[in-house]
Image (spheres, rainbow, N blue to C red):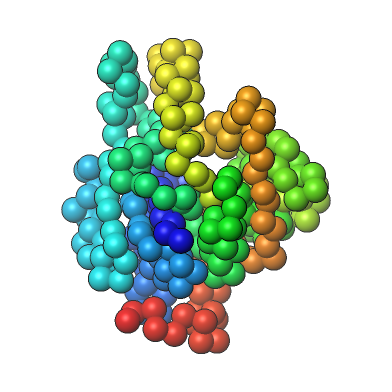
Length: 282
């Protein structure tokens, strides 16, 4: 079965500073995106779609695109603030992007298969891609990678996580919690979403409808964002659909703060030394 990989790479980390998707993490300068694409292709995904901004296209292609294009069918789509339905105009003062729901919607024209959505700057672990691909291949519907909260925290500051309510292996609710410290009182085995979603192409029509409703209510709020998990929550309730939660013991790695960089590099290097990423440059 064909399945696509959609990589949300339009954001620039405000707390990290700069284009953190391009930060070298591997022993030979590999980026987290390199490992993500390697893991996805190995699992069976056949196409990568990068959601970026037009103003970073040249830098993004130079930093990683030209290398990734050699190993997988690659497409680029652009998430721009003025990419709105015809009846809406970009309000003055809007600086923030419209959010992850809008990012996925921007990929509609090139995504024709069931697809996996990931963040460009998150290292998810190899086994998760295999689980997600197998589910998308064998089922019609949505799925989510469920991480243990304790495997996703940063010792260098607080994080935001989608805390999930899971019943009988299915997602019932997801709520965004902000400013979660390393020593949080939330149980560390609580299942959280790291924005790794397996979706069907039917999500696009639903996203378009919900985005218009969002804009009607929020277009003049310069900070409001259209978040993918909130749309999926609504789709579960309104369409009586299910989202299978594929739980994992994988350790998530990500650079939320500059101080995270060294520990992420060390962790990835340990995996490389174990031979898990043999052939990543081939």
